[in-house]
Image (cartoon, rainbow, N blue to C red):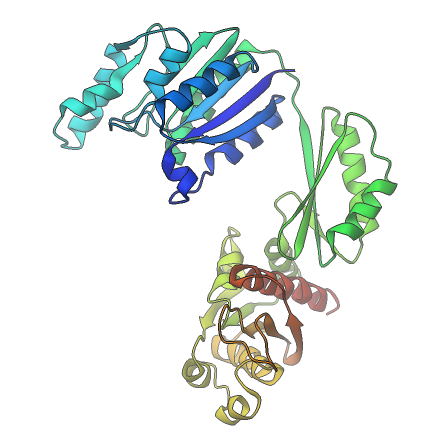
Length: 406
């Protein structure tokens, strides 16, 4: 078992001005490779704090990966704190300095004294090249542990890890690859899924994790024997014939687009409260343009009337958030964009705009399939983002069921 800690360094991460995506990205790759990620932390730009955490962690982990704090500014403290924790001094690294100067010169940047600071690295460190930025990564050994520091810029870190750090770690440690298979289930509460998972009698050595995300559950199976991982993932999928979405990255949008191709249908969307989220979800899938033709974001009543041809009297009588308006929006999208199918979403996402009759979370969705239109009303819980996300996932899931039966 190789124990790994991931430390994302930077005060901006703790105050929320930048979201740490590096740790989850690293965790997924390390876990698949067979490492055990035992600790993930956000650490502020405080020299004493960083040194103390590193010194303690050297005794607890086999590998410590840090991201961030290796730039040229005064608050970039990673190199000096790693050196101090490992009992080393920082020295000017000629290879790192040469790379930095060449990189900046190519871009017409005047070299400042502060730039030199970026090449002050722990003595005798291992270097990891950076083909996308100025700062090399570096590794230092101490207490039977290796600390590897990488840039905080995600695309720089991704390339450095995949190209240099991961191969180095795999050569250093003998590991067995961990297999995984994710099962996507929609439209059921976590507790219902948990009941079925318990009945599967998961064997020792097979991990099962349930993640819930606004209308969809992701059940992750992980283990070192691929056949067992596959067996139990398949068993769970078969336990939910009406709610199983797909495996891995085969999300609701992917499934809907596949069905549209099979049925030789095309799709348009008309969105109000989701503001383009549904269209974005569909276009995240590569190649979706063969069946998804486009959409209209009709946030105002005027746009609903002019572009979707929603009769004004319908909105006056029933309101913009109503099944009647959702029906007219779906018909309008199909007619205006000339598709066989359309989805419309209109609602009150909040935090304002709710009434006693139509409180925040009220959403009406319309589904048009070959001229036939059905509508449904929902009351989604949560804040604005949660309401909108639940609305688009519900729209996708229910459209899938309608098209399956055509």
